[in-house]
Image 1 (cartoon, rainbow, N blue to C red):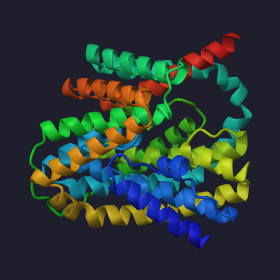
Image 2 (cartoon, rainbow, N blue to C red; image 1 turned 120 degrees about the vertical axis):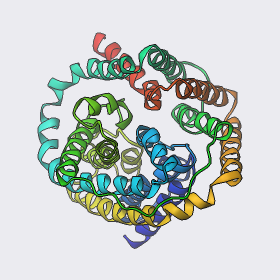
Image 3 (cartoon, helix red, strand yellow; image 1 turned 180 degrees about the horizontal axis):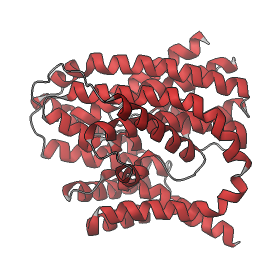
Length: 391
């Protein structure tokens, strides 16, 4: 287990500090293999859990979220940074993710058996639920939101369901939406990062509890629903009272943790790998046991504590490192590097990434919630499910 923990921490920290790099890259592209199943579980849990808080660093200071979960907090965390309160924003991320992990380890074993036992009743409603959530989110963002959702859905449908040779269509889309597009804007319209104040957040206890329960419940549901992720629940959260910056950051940061735990539990109950981590586990272990599921939960909590500690400790130094001209150079280098890496996979992959980047730039310049870009996965999934139901 020690070997898996060490490799997992390295993968989580490396992906957390590197814009555009995600643990899924380690699961799919590097994919280490361990002879001991406990090492496989440990590697998966630590990779994900240390990355969840650390991935918010480049979101705050570079404007380049590396996953859908970070996209949901892109705007509020950048606002904290612009006000010299990045340390406070990082503290809210840490509190939300930690509280959600604790509540999820209690709620997941209780709710997952109920969901799995009744899944055949729920399944016919899933495509309509997906389309309803995306439509609500698009409506909240006005006509530009509708354009963004439509364009993202079209890109996803073409990339996933056509004969275009795209080596990794999901990776190409997400690189364009969440790295290349925001990176270009960060270089061209970058504002100077002020000196950050070392102030810790002091949220109300009731807000922490409410955010944790909401995040856990949402994450559990997402674990059993294909196509939807943390980015698609923004509109719902705002309607449920998460309308202050503190509540919103805590709740959305917690969904990532709950979703990760729920996805592995879904793999145990339903043999349904709906995340990069669960796909990796299924590939190397076949089916996971309940003991391995519990082991994953415990190790995930351990890694999250480590990740939040590193996040709060490195927040100010990282801000100083990427301020001014250095930030522009680092961001531009990341954008060029990711574009070249995508081009190496062929013109299809590059075309998808550039099209996604164009939609991302359009949406951000018009004030659209960037998480609407996740319609690229949600809508094609819903249409596929409707087609399967019709046959």
